[in-house]
Image (cartoon, rainbow over all chains, first blue to last red; front, top):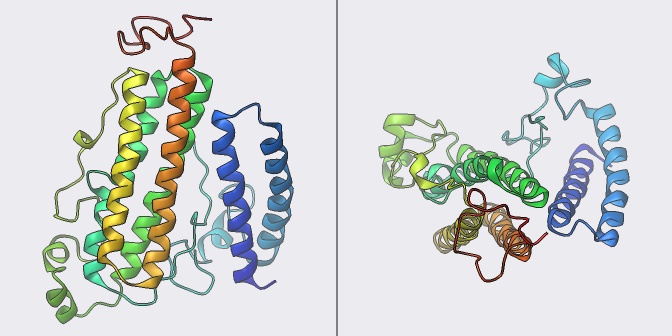
Length: 83
Length: 204
């Protein structure tokens, strides 16, 4: 996968996790939704690791500092690697 | 606290600048039913929410609204790049430009600066949840109005995503309100302030 497609895949999985997370706020006992969230969670970890190894950190912290954090595109940039 | 992740919640790639569209969409940045008001409303109200579900729900939706604020700011930023003086004057963007250039500033489309008077934190969870459900519908209407005025496909795609989230949040707040009233005396939902006058776990 190139940078753009891995980023979009990552964003899609992240969104699924987020939406399930919100659903579980009001349905905390829904085991099926929790199971689905865990499936996406494992995809998310893999995609995040793959992206960060190839293209630099996405999250400020352990890996996200200095030029590796500062120089790649910011989310509002209209570049091929943006958003 | 919050950790920043260098991604938008939904991708934004606007190919054609358009300052008039930026001025219209501005209202969802710092206008009366915009994302800044939404995030401050939920993140402020959550402190007096009486149940774990509601504390979590307001924290999470408030957090997502900050992500939407970033998205609306990104739309405005991409719509206002590389403008000529002529484009600025012809589009009606000059009244914004003279004060802010192409800076992203929290104001309504009509230029009214953001004010905390757009939101309430009443300390009564029933009142606050009704306000939040109304707020989601008002924002949904504003996105519908934007869709009536904007015919650029790159912009419309993002606005449709944001509009859909208002509907999801309305649904979640409705469920939160139901979870709250399920734990209250059904003869007295609106007779007192559950956060202050009576413990919400009145019925156990």
